[in-house]
Length: 117
Image (cartoon, rainbow, N blue to C red):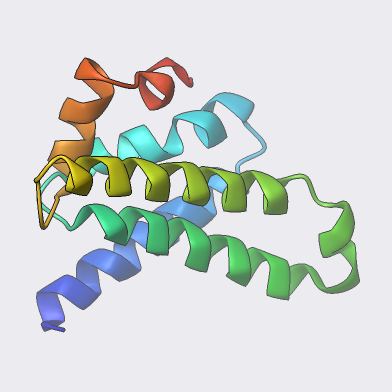
């Protein structure tokens, strides 16, 4: 992995952690869409990885409180949903897919992430 790619992924993870822990329900729900808009040229699966890594970090840092923190299941749910969309996009022949391809998919096929705000 190139240094540039690692830097973008680290930024994505930091961004996801900030949004998930913001306390603002709108920011949490809009996080994946905002990530795709902010990093359109990054691999689409990088969004899912970043959300998963951010959620896991939050979970690890929460210790015993993690089981009661609603951010944990939300983060994993958003990661699973974006992963399913990546699979759909790639099944349609857009391989490898970038975050901008997800934005197109959401506008044309499944607007869930566009409606979340």
